[in-house]
Amino acid sequence: MTSLFISDLHLDEKRPDITRAFFDFLRSHASKAQTLYILGDFFEAWIGDDDRSDLIDQVSAELKNLTNKGVALYIMHGNRDFLIGRQFCNTVGAELLSDPTVIELNGEATLLMHGDSLCSDDQEYMQFRKMLRSADWQKEALAKPLEERRVIAQHLRMASSEANSNKAEDIMDVNPDDVIREMQNHQCHRLIHGHTHRPMRHPLSIGGKPAERIVLGDWDNAIWFLSADDRDLKLEKIPFSSTAH
Image (tube, rainbow, N blue to C red):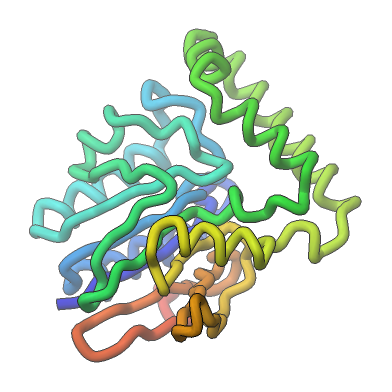
């Protein structure tokens, strides 16, 4: 059976094309798989499981339909949707994964991450991430009224976009030494992550043995996914135009 890995869809009501592509992907690919892993930034923003919108309702219904068919669904927090909680996961029949998580894939221990924690050269972001991921900050944020949380989320997105526009491209990529260190710490020779929007398969060497870092792509104009079966792993891209109704 097949396991599928996706990340960085950034689902947003302003981008119905991405939502349509995701629903097409669920019906054409995910429904035939054994497992679907969503490794962060599934939504452009998530202000709490108590939020409601047409987008959330539609996505929830499609995911529940998928899991009702017997497909195992796993969701990991990203830097945009780190407030996704167990209530949402229970509603759609998913399991919330910690970041990082180790799974067995084709008989090999495989490390799953969103990827933002590997971008350690961006010290400004790492401090920002530390604040947002703290239990105290999240508890305080979730206690605020929904409308206030929406304003905070919009402010955080604008601040992030402005900050990134002034940074060198290499600063926002992963630190190679941190990649090796993280893989060694978890005794894995394969890493799958997203976040950087730079899809590629990177051959590595760890302790003199071959290893690999697989980067998932974002869904700005195409469906990116990793497909893993008993025979092979394939990083695949499908342009939105190929799935449009």
